[in-house]
Every structure is written in C-alpha cells, then in structure tokens.
Image (cartoon, rainbow, N blue to C red):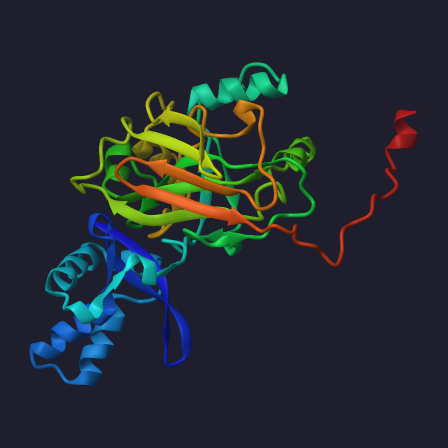
Length: 341
C-alpha cells in the first residue's frame, strides 16, 4: 500500500490529511473522508462517524503508524470502500511531507558513495569505524519538505547538494532489538533527500560536533510511503534510483552493497535507545547519488527529482532568490591563538 499526506482546506483552514495513493490512476483517497462516509452508510451518526474517522486517520502520519496493524487494516478497508467524493486527482492535490518523524537519523552505509566522496574531497579512505558500527547523525525535524514543496535556498551556502537515500520508516516501538526483531518494526520505504551545504559542511565537521547548518535547512521526505510487502516494491537491495536536475538526468544508482542491512540499522539505533513509530532512518547516499560525486552543485531556482523504483519521484524546487537572515554570528577572538604562537 502507498500512504501519503496532503494539505486540504477545511472549516479551520488548510490541514494535513492522510491519503491512500494510487499512482497508476493518478489519484488519492482521503482516508478520513472515506471512513466517515463508510460509517455513515453503515448507520453511524455524523458525529460518531467523524470522531472515529479522525481517530483512525489523524493529521500526523507518525500518530497513525503508532496504531499498529490496525492503521493499515483500516486504511485498506476505507480505501476499498471509498466513494468518488473521497477521491482526488493528483492535479488537485497539494502534497506535504509524507511523514512527520519524531526523530530523523541519517546513516552512511553505501561504500561506493563513501569512496567517491572521499576521492572528490581528497580525504582518502573512509574511517575504519564505519565498518565496525553503523554511523549516523540526527537532523532537525523542523525543516522537512514534501513533494513539490519549494525550499528556501540558504544564502549562507555556495555549493548546495542533494543526496539520494532510502528513507526507512519505523513502524513500532523497540529497544535493544536484534535485527530479526527490528525487521518486524520496519513499516515502509520512502525517498529521503539529505540536502547538504558542502562548503559549510567542510567547516562544521572540523569542529568535531557533527553537522549543523550544513544539514539543518532542508530534508525532503516523500512523495509517499510504500509499505513493506507492497507488490510494487522490489527487495530493498535491488532498487534502481535516478536523479534529474531541471529535467536532465544526472545519475543513476542501485541500492546493492549496503554495509549494514536496513534491519541492522534499526537494531543498532535501538541499542540503549528507543525506536518510535514514525522515526525515519536514512540509508546513506547511494553511489552516484550526490552532485558532489559528479563534480557539480545546485543553484537557486534548480529543481531536483529523485526517483526510486517501487516508490515514486520526490521533486523539490529551490527558491530563485536565496533566503536572507537578520543575523549571523561574527568571528570571536580565539584565546588559544596566543598559546599556539
């Protein structure tokens, strides 16, 4: 099944709505509306029908996933019974991020990307620790963008990059899991675009504290989530991926050769920590999945399309004018300069 989120205007203005997605038919089904109409047809009162439909299909995808198997079962039932009043054509839809994750974690587990990244920057082979334990960082959940949403181009960056990744969506709570147990918590797959300001990244990573502004200006998630077991979804290590910028194909890649499997990534995160429904874990960039590997970068006004077979196409355009900020820190005197001299 394919599940997403759209913004739909209601009595109180625009609000997120969960939808079942039918790409072949270029339409979506508003699940809360479909369930409400189904309940009314079965004899429920309007208030009771609305109350139950809203509980099953809240604005938050993470909250819906937290219902467990009951969520997907209810979505399949509502989708199958949906009347035409609950269906919308793609050209009527305004997409928002398919997921509102409690936590964003992003890994680095495709050796080809790691090799080509290192060669471009002249930093040599990847740190051996990547082959001992999975590496990941945490990103801001406040800058998540969905399909076709425009992203403000950050004026502090001069070399902006996309990163094509599998977005592993967590479907249940878990702590100290084995990979077999973690596999059961894998709800679905989406496209995760880990945008990067490469010129800022080089400065920040030298601080030894991980990425900051070089990452926390935009993460793309969408266009929707394809659930594990969907017949359109190939095995997660056999996915073909493509990148297009302004309609030109820049690169293709495949999802084979991960150092750690999706189940192992989830299991490692859970050690001494807690997986939550709706968490997203980026797989790390697939080989050839970044502009840096090609010696290129993005400019204001560029449109990026990331495609994964069995999932869909995530498209975002950057604003033509870079976003300006009212303040930026000024360098301070370094008290250690005198010690070194």
